[in-house]
Image 1 (cartoon, helix red, strand yellow):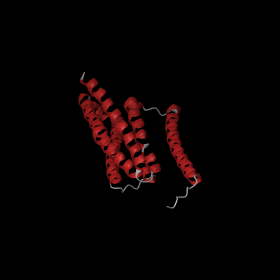
Image 2 (cartoon, one colour):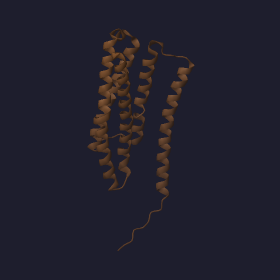
Image 3 (tube, one colour):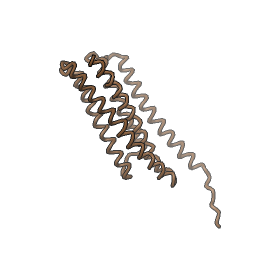
Image 4 (cartoon, helix red, strand yellow):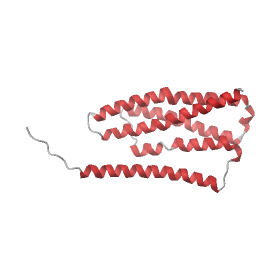
Amino acid sequence: MAYSWYKAFHIVGFVVWFAGLFYLVRLFIYHVEANQEPEPARTILKNQYQIMEKRLYSIITTPGMFLTIAMAIGLLSTEPDVLKEGWLHIKLLFVAILIGYHHYCARLIKQLAADECRWSGQQLRALNEAPTVMLVVIVLLAVFKNNLPTDITAWGIFGLIIFMAVTIQLYAKKRKRDKEKLMTQIPQVPQEQS
C-alpha cells in the first residue's frame, strides 16, 4: 500500500514541478520582452513579472521538486532492488540535469531582478524546450524501463517532438519579424508644439 501512496504523490509532485518549470521560463520571456515596451509600461510589467517569477518558483515549482524527490526516495525504499537497473541510472541522470535546470532558473530570476540577464526572448524560448525533452525521456524510461522501443514508431515520435520544437522556434521568429515590420509601417505622428 505504501508503494501506491508514494507513486501517486510522486506523479502529483512531478506534474506540479514541470508545470512550474514550463510557466517560469515563459515568464522570463515576457520579462525580457518587456524591455521593448515604452515607460511606464516597461517598469510596471517588469516589476509584476519579477513578483510572479519569485512566487511561482518558491511556492509551486520548488515544493513540486521536493515532493517529487521525497516520493521517489519513498518508492525506492519499497523496492531497493530497482537501484541495480540500468534504466533507473539513466533516469536519475536526467533528473539530476533537471534539478540543475531548476537551480539555473533561480539564477535567472536573480539576473532578471538585477537587470543583468543577457538571454534574448528567442534564446529563452529555446531554453523552455529543455524540460519538455527531459520529461519525455524520463517518462519513457519509467514506463518502458529496460525495454525502451527503438523501432520506427519510437523514432517517429522523437522526430515529431523535434519538429514541434523547431516549429515553435520558427513561429516565434515570424511573430518577431511581423511585429518589427508593423512598427516600421506605423506612421509617426508629429507632436504639436505648444
